[in-house]
Image (cartoon, rainbow, N blue to C red; front, side, top):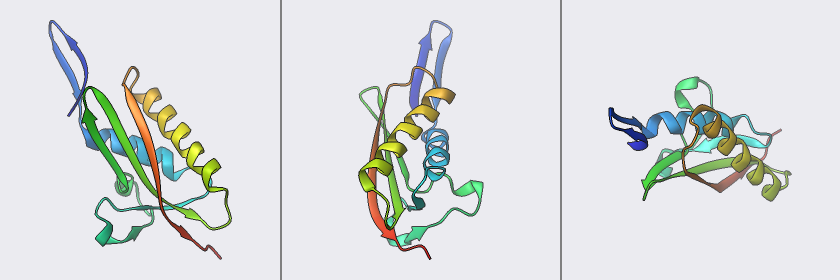
Length: 118
């Protein structure tokens, strides 16, 4: 769980699953993203066909009060990798900030593969 806020009345904690779904939805909507790599690489490359798969390829970890979001993607061949990766970072960061304000976060993008789309 990621601690969001602590008051005298109690605290607000968010599950990593919630954060991973918000981040995954933002990542999959970015130009050049063909799919996500499963958290367990042996399961293979996953493409998005339903909303229950938005957390595939997203790892969320709480490190010293900072939420570290790792995004593992498959990009389309022919795109500028650094520009697409930067766009993914920006979109994921924006989406998480929109839904979960004041969350200290770091977004890392890992390009695990490229796919030739016909």
